[in-house]
Image (cartoon, chains in turn yellow, brown):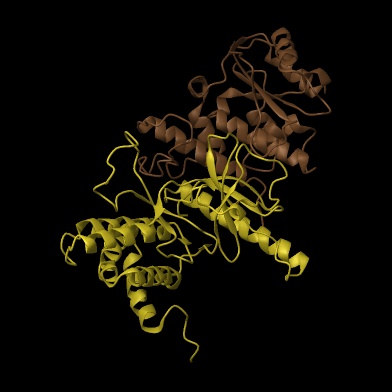
Length: 267
Length: 212
């Protein structure tokens, strides 16, 4: 959900599938597109309330009846998981509205940027400043800790994400006092972690599923920077403290690391 | 500023306007409820007990859903106004939703929502004068600050089943500083708790009828 400014967006990104028959004050803006869904920035109820609009267009290659059923099922299950998380204090966007027949889900707009981008910027600025790896990595470790406890809280309530990458973790700036200030914010990795994109999430208490979440996240950090992967221990440390069964999951993670995300087909 | 507020909600046609009025200390709740039960067409309003309304957004969300369902021809109740009351419900029990959210003889603070459509076009002043002549009570501005004083928070939490895990209070406001929602930016604990309650309520409403 990177910030796309209307001015820099090509005109065609404003083309709007007929999700809604009736307009809003400003046309919804296409933010990103996945295999299954389109994500728009739009408004809910009033022009002053931004929202994220996730639209699942119908797939022409699917049988129409199956298509409707799948879309409906996915919208509802994502909404249910989000509501459950929010209710139990897991940091996720709130659900505003949905229309499973029309294929859309409207959720809270989360300000900020995904961890992937912020982390890359941070690494870049350190490189330019010739800061040696490992020096003063406290800020990064701190971020890892926040990630670990957010994921732990999600797992603790019986939800697994299913696609836990650094693109699905938002860093949301803390309460903006003075909004403009601190041009070069000294703390680039500051902010609250918000988990997003629950399109592949499910309700599960299985250690296996939880471990795979962690494994996928570990790989995602690793692909950003080797340094980040070595600090992944910070995530696990915070995770371990976040709920009772976490220790078992970490054991399981070692197993998953040995074989990869998929279960072995052998034996 | 007029006490009756008229808004056009996002993603609804311009022809469908939402008019909202808030009354305190009403004296003729029984009479008003009877007009609804008798199907008196002069009283096509959503008459909502303001005690179960958390915020303006909460009310608008119910209106949005009802009008959207009206446009999609899938009303579950008699008309768009009863549907607004039903939209507030976290479950599919319509008569229970009227008991919980609708006007009852003991209602003292009343939120009134009127939807005007091309087939029932009334001006805001016509609506206001009808309300003035039929509601015995003090009309007050439809504002969050006033609504909040009228909310029965424990009752709201009970209805939406938000008690089990301290729903809302638990995360100490460290969630989601939703900037730029047009509301006040500064937020003390109480304010962010109220905000969180509102978001949980909206989620519960959105999931109404979700079974599959």
